[in-house]
Length: 424
Length: 190
Image 1: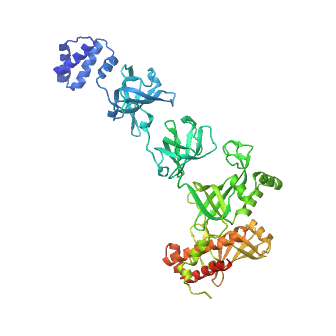
Image 2: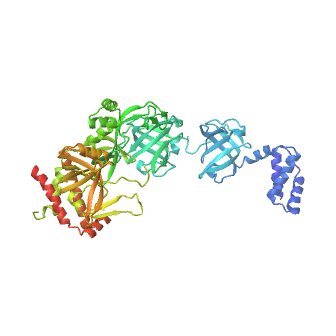
Image 3: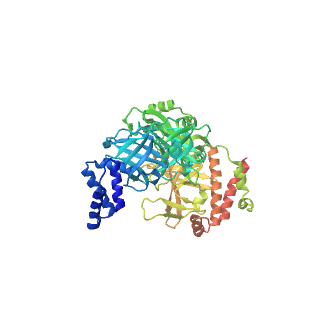
């Protein structure tokens, strides 16, 4: 009890107030002995009593008190705790909500943590690269990751001496997600880093999308979307890039990656070979599906119009295009193949202009589809291209013309066939 | 595309084997279930792709046009029927010159006669005139696939092969001989 009384006295001495030890002791004694109050509660109560008596604001007193009890970022382990941190502002992020004043990353010698400073705190802005002592901040947790929040009771004090951050200077690469093969991206909401070549860039469908298309590596091909809000540079078709910190998502069983504000794009010198994604399929063309032949596309988003209307942009004056959605059939499986205008023109010997003329002549674009069917259905083709969903996006399609003599010989030499006694 | 939907593969069956087939089946619990014919070499056929020579055609309809065409392959012939619900195919049959190489994609349908024979005919989804090279490619294609199935039946490799063997007691040697004969005709032409 004597100890407790002395520690109370010491604190008040620091504030320049000499509280008689006997006063403290008698008050403590009354609470602890007479009223059975636990020592720490008694200590607080006595302290508060003298604070009131000498008109010292509680906040000021406790803020100074807290100073020796600094928490290290690595030790943060419980949601809802209050803490004081000595940290350096590593990164400030773009604000996502009007009630947030600042958001970003703080670091000390033990680790890095996200912080949020609410608008309602009324505190001045933190500056990137500066170090601060932050008092009375609250620890929060989301999805197993901790963050700290500055609120109305928090205070900040700029430190002259910079705080050392773990691992020296913080660079984005320090928090890079794991490098993965595209074929292994089979789980949504997972972060990953991929290296691949831009195989295709698609026409933009929406203003909030910066770029969308296909990226492939040795193991496979995946769709990517780069949101305009990510503010990342554009990529070029045919070049290879490293995409750091992308998010995998899934829709209808198909996976895609999304680039966001915390992603990075780095152009690579090497040319990544896209493997496994080029599929080749041989078979008889057994069908040409509706939506083939002479079609109109929306001038804005390039989607095929349905009855003159774009699903996104409504009634538009469409642009003509030729394409074929073909079904190849090997006898044991089927494969849908998308054939673009250039290949269609070459395959059928019909240019887009003559197709338009044909349709105008007959007052019916269906004649073009009929012609394609007459020319193509029932014949054997080999198509190759990137596989996407159920389609092969054909890079080439060639008619099979010559017989495979090797196969004929092989079949004739089949034991059961060759050694069979002469029929007839 | 809706999950669970898949396109019926167009099987490759010689006319002789299709004529020998008499095991039709369908999932009775679903009125929209496709009807299948199981052939002696274990092909489960709903859609079929064939290339052959259109050698006969006749309008057998009474009120409206109903066309029957006969398409021959190296082992026999297929009968195809096209009426008002197959307008493109019916029109093709009505306009075409005989004989002609044609490629047919269609669905098989079976009919059981009073004396218990099962007749298999084809309702075409499309008929297109093709060249001789395509016909030859088809014969090679079908020969290979028939041989593959014969081997599967001998090994009782999958449920269809097993069922075929059980039902037809398939004489694989005779089908081998059929394929051999077809292939030799190629050899001679060279």
